[in-house]
Image (cartoon, rainbow, N blue to C red; front, side, top):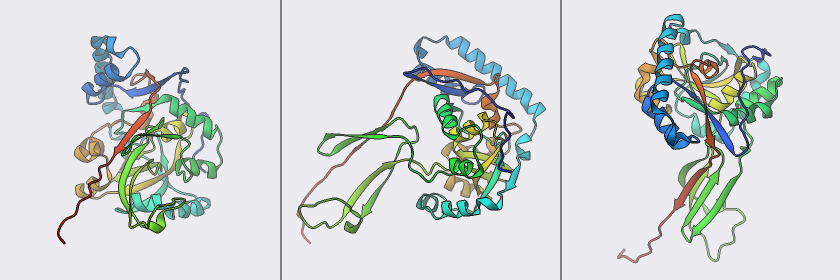
Length: 318
């Protein structure tokens, strides 16, 4: 009922060695230059990699995608979306009441459904294999319906420590091992929104420079019959690797290009025809196809956000 199919389509996601990670790439998808740049700049010993061999394997995968265009023509149109069982209703309402949902999904109609994972269309061509493995271990092989829903729609704080260093009076660096870590916005706060701050004078206003994480809900964008996976790539890959075929997903529906630009990542908004009209776009199940996927060794990395600010005080005629 909750999409669990033990053993169905189960795939191995290799464990990373200590001190290194692993990035799983889909070969054969545009653009070749992105793949070559990533190998050269990011992977272990990538600077000395055989460029000719890299291009050859990418070309072979690209030819394989042509074969898939014949054997799986428009298969993305047949993605299965089931209505969520009634037992999920309280959990859905809990998500809708969360500020992260209200701030992120405030533009277009949204629904929750049990979505077939294999036929979700991808715009992101790689996932961190070591993080997928971590998520698999965290969820376990046989989650109950509530655990599955909360894994897909987490409301708890991310399990990713953030380190903060002050490098000067007006310069700070935030760091995290999570690739989801990002700068949010500059926000003007009221004095009563401060807590545990002892000021040496009356506070007139507060400018907050906010760093944190995304809403992290498994969500997709629907146009006609197709669903493009928007966020939750590692979670969706971990679920499929555990043999789970369907999972709770938050869906935003677009009916015209102007709406797509409001909610989609730039790559999707600028090339909608590739994702919503091409015969065989990349699908989630491709991460488990040995003819397409390639595991690349990478050093352990962290994401840094440097925030600095400038203050100018002056007296001018009123």
